[in-house]
Image (tube, rainbow, N blue to C red; front, side):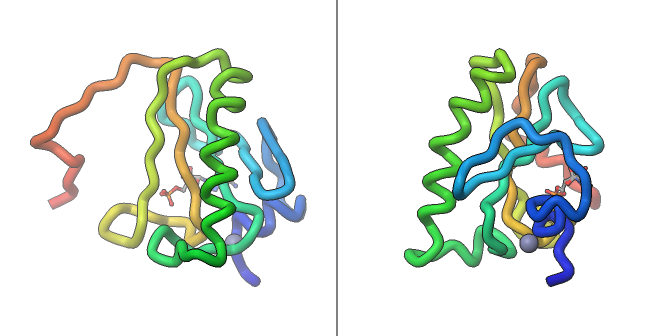
Length: 117
Ligand code: AMP
Ligand code: ZN
């Protein structure tokens, strides 16, 4: 399958790993937008959040079990998790992933979603 993150999981494309278990792979984002910017992905190809179901949701559980461990190893107690699902949300890599962002005080504006138009 021609999927960037499947290739990263398989080691065909290099990445900076920060965590791995049977279900989960986590690595540093190549273009970080925060001091800590880790991508947490399932070790199976799920294209996006719309394709999470009862068959594969164990991967999502395992991702969220891994998050506190990753946060601890990154020395952050406070963080934001973002999932972009689909083109309008800005999903560029069609393999489910959660951005784990931290190490900086972040703003939160309910009247702005960073709209492009
Ligand atoms: P999204 O826009 O939500 O689909 O996020 C995709 C993320 O993957 C972006 O933040 C990119 O910077 C990141 N990315 C793309 N290629 C690589 C790569 N080879 N290694 C690590 N991160 C990558
Ligand atoms: Zn994939």
